[in-house]
Amino acid sequence: MRSLRGRLNRGLVAILVIVFASQWLLGSYATRLVVEHEMLTRLEHDGDSLLSSFEVGQDGAIRFDTHRLGLIYEQTYSGHYLDIHADGQVFHSRSLADEHMAVEPLAPGQRRQYHCVGPEGQPLLVLARGLALQGQNITLTVAEELTAIDHEIASLSLGYLVLSTSLLLVAIIWQRLDVRRALRPLSELRRDLLAIARGESSRIASDAPAEIRPLVDEINRLLVLTARRLQQSRTAVGNLAHALKTPLAILFRIAADSRLEATPDLARHLLEQSTTIHRRIERELKRARLAGAGSSGALFNPGEELPVLVQVLENVYLEKNLAVEVVAPCQLFPYDREDLLELIGNLADNACKWAEGKVHIHVACQDGFTVNVEDDGPGCTPDKIAQLSQRGLRLDESKPGHGLGLAIARDIAEFYGGDLEFGRSESLGGLSVRVFLPMPPAIA
Image (cartoon, rainbow, N blue to C red; front, side):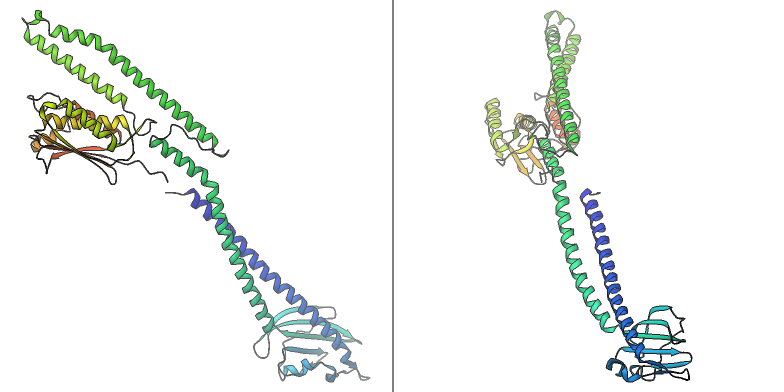
């Protein structure tokens, strides 16, 4: 899954790395340029001061007074070197010993600066100039070793690298925190949406920034529109059902009319069809009333609600003297209270209807919401258990009921993305119905 935060972080980190690497490289390069510029200036001054050591004799020969050189040019391999070419004559400082620097003759006014390798393999910075002295062309070459300077520049670059890296890490941490702060409204928006999904709110209430405010307004408008249409749909279904109740009651009275005793098949057929219509109406009314986890109705607390439900069932089946055991946590679950009471109520009513004396209702919350309803009744054969998934199936004509309660329970479970599982109770021996509802995402 693509992450907006990850993309922003990667992009900003890449930009910061490029910027800091570029400024480090440019800084190191600029430092070397400045240092070498100062060295060249010094070499030029040394060359100018050495010109006073030249003399041109009456015979036109050039003489060079080596005693006037500085001590640094007198020490062998001192790191400061001098080489002079004057019309076939070659002079060099004692620091070169018996070595010579490869020098190309330069015309007066010409100038070259370059790097080369010294007599001991050390790097040198060389300044060569073409000069004219009393009609004689001279190529004056002065060089200085770079080893110490390179070490100083390397140390300076290393320190600058450490500083740049530290600043880069600080900048990366800062920009990651800044991106997190910038995206915090999206996290608040997510929490609001999850609160709506859990039924804790009906709209997004967070104060969103201007960039996402239109999105928040559109979502709120859509929520209002959806709630209005849902209410209109429920009202329409309810009105239709109530409108059908009167003609349906008339059909029941006609089916029971004594004048149809002469045609019992017609009376029975009329009664069956009227009963089917009545069941369909009741079921569709219950389906239309489903609120779902996204409504703002009361949430479900099984620890408080189920004992009251059990009391009602025990009163309804008072003659059976049932022992109904309830094990349920006393906490709120993100499902509509009426929906869950309808679901568990239908399953518990079916269990009480078939039970001989015991009914167990167990509620657990582990990787989802689970309800197990068991009874000690006759149970079902494997074939009939497989058939229970058929909606509205009638399992036993000798007992009242037509399977509508189980069908409604399945509708509610499927509405929440869950399912029903049927089997035989291991502890009581009767039918066992397990309902599993996935838990909506937790609010982070």
